[in-house]
Image (cartoon, rainbow over all chains, first blue to last red; front, side, top):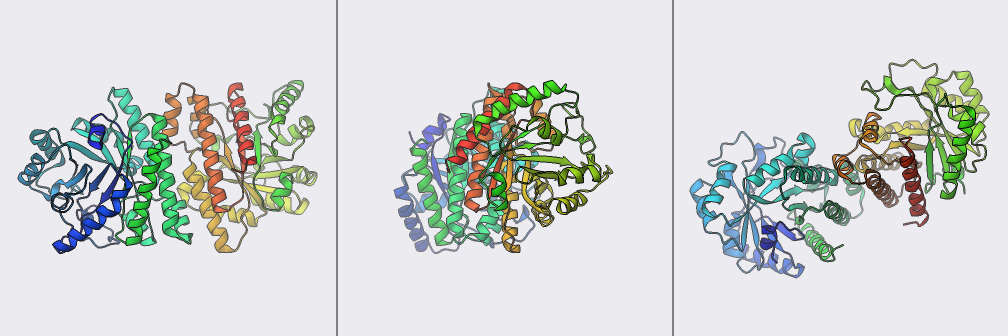
Length: 308
Length: 308
């Protein structure tokens, strides 16, 4: 069963790989080349699906200086339609709803093939921004124009550490139609365990079937990438930072850490009996970091297939 | 090499078991029985040593109501001398320095056989209490009257989470003569990893050899014991609490959790190349919880001996 089928049945056990589309200013022939190289790199892994992020300028969310400058990227829907048509598995397309008008969003939602595309709708980055359409309006729109199109939501373990109510937000999103959740990058396994634990027991108490939570992992090849992860809101434990800072091979150490964290969370979710998936993203655009991400995904596909 | 020899060489790899002496009001023949039963229970484990706690009324440290009422216990030095003479391994005797006058403490320190006894000096429970002798005076006293007597100190990962300077406190204690540290009960592995990581890298930066940190683990057989752990200042992660609350077999689940936490920390310390020991204590005096603690220690001795 492919990942769309699994999600319809509330089953986990899949591995996705997340891509950020090329920069908006990239020449079309170069975009085609990038897409081709990416597909070649990923095909041997036997992934269950891709995620395409929709990058928004999040400077309204975080007043600190962004460690890597923001550069607008290609619309992920366009990138998929025009450059990744040859890719075989289902694809999750993110939509930063604040970037689109209701008509454009409605048109896109209604024209998607629900057997091949899923979407994660993401709200505006901060309460200060005035989007043309709110997250809940966008959720209603999806239900109205293409109810079969699988909808996912964002899950943030770090927010759970601060406010202890992220599990209730997930359940509210589930009631608004979400059939899976994708976390931001996980470095602190404890916060992720706390969230999935509270979510699972709350579902049981409310008589709701839990849906798969997809945990995202990423390697970090330099202190600059670490700084960027923190800017994005990822809690990186001190011991992980120390080990990376003092490692002879930062990237190799990070790959081991991320693999261990994913295996630990997978084992915890199995014990808890809750469905889960794994997503690997490359936060950096450096070639070595992308290759290490691909290696991480390869090892995690292997781990999940072995049923360990 | 026994644990005293190992500590003199800054080597870890040992397992201790911590006991709280019987209540002060217990009849002497009953104390003798308890000591006999305890030694019979522990002898088959092949432990490297015992720890005897010196219980102080910590209500000045924590204004919340103590979940279990405080009852004064026998002086651990007396318990060792009069009831545990038949025990074969070295013993770490805690001294809550605020409870003793300088003369008594000096007399006890000077009369100990450094091949068999070690001590952990513990400061007064709060800044409000006015002890007859301060922790640093007691440390100086030990150096003056019995410099061979191995001195240990207390390490609190939770304090490191709040203040980020516990590793500097450890190094200061080391300069005051400490040759090992014993943590309070560890439930949150992340805080313990952060502390040992910061301590290790700080030692390296300062050209100091790290000394063994002894991590303490304990099982929890009921929500009442969990409440008591929290009262004692132990951070118990939400997911651990949830799993215990919903477990059919709370004690068995806790035993697995504690074993996994100890194995994870042991593996982390090995990777870091820092010496460590393991201590198991029974926080509760219920017989089933004591037996589960003994089982935890048995499995951890086996784990460390296997060199895994």
